[in-house]
Length: 239
Image 1 (cartoon, rainbow, N blue to C red):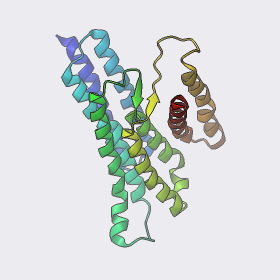
Image 2: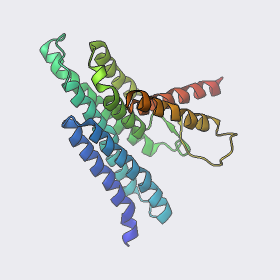
Image 3: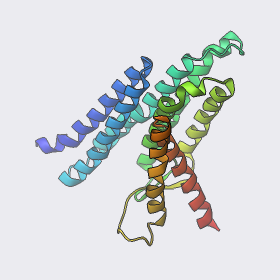
């Protein structure tokens, strides 16, 4: 039956978008790389929805989805960071270490794969996430490099901060930190306070950098705010 192949076809479109994003990343065309990561995210949203609507979910579809996600949301953003770091000359470091530094970006691809493998086995993530979702991580890095990449290369402190952030975000991918998902059982305020606060604050975070600096760096700010809000609400709930 043709319909059983539709979700997997959409998933493969996600994977292809990730491959194209990776190509543009290695070419130093970060705007195009980010665009195809976003396109991949759209396909990723619709493949699961289509499988549920058509009642054709399958184990192979679940595994294929994770493989596609690791390309689009793991390897592609790592390639963006790698390519960007290759453009910075680590004059202050010995030549061998300077050569190795850009390759630290691919640590995040490995942690993305680990996060996706854990997600497939974790039954706690029906209405939320444990750890940072890979699409959010990919959007953060794509928007950060596209929006502020030139500025970040003006100081070695900024460059090393980016490398440190790679390790921080790699940890967040697998951390046992509950993070909310934008899934609504009802549209009322009660029970959805955090989600509505997040959505409302996203507007100025995205629009102000666009207006003031013609930069999409606000998208990276939204992802950072998402992490902060998730951690804050979790700590508040533990008290």
